[in-house]
Image (cartoon, rainbow, N blue to C red):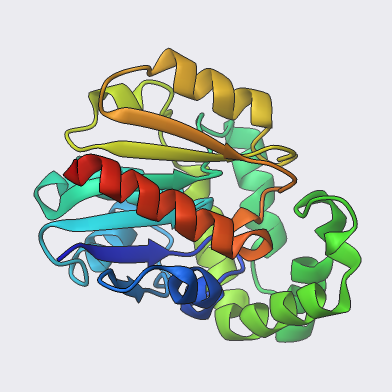
Length: 235
């Protein structure tokens, strides 16, 4: 039986994946993890690996996609498949990485929550970032996630390696899920990434009318894409 392991993005927790998991068909086992507050990407991934059973399909959103790719590199024996949802592609330049880490360091819970809510219009499609229910869910997740994780992950993501040629070299099937209107990891970049890594084991699917927060915006559609892709692997 397929076991899916879901990894959240920045400001997200395991519960963020609940709508996607709830929309999966019967017969699929799924676990969502909270990412540990570890600033070293290697150490973070090694901790996550301890919670991933051999033969799992790992699904990572944004930062979770960065972790998932690093997991596939360091612990390839664990993975039967990899799903990258609006995942960053290239490395971050050192100045931007340092500025990100400095901004995140030493925040109070209140200041961190303001950052989590700031600029939501840029990470959701259309007016979704202004929807009270969407904002309430963002705040709920942020209160669980907290400033310690934000500070650690802001450092870790800044040291991510370039992954432009990763999917084609991966040792397991890879599904790249792009959002039609992603302003964080631009849609054109997602398409170019998929085209550059065209291979029999690499699949690209783009979900319409979604932004960077695709798992929150279209959980049912994402669950359907996952289910269809898994069925194609079995076929």
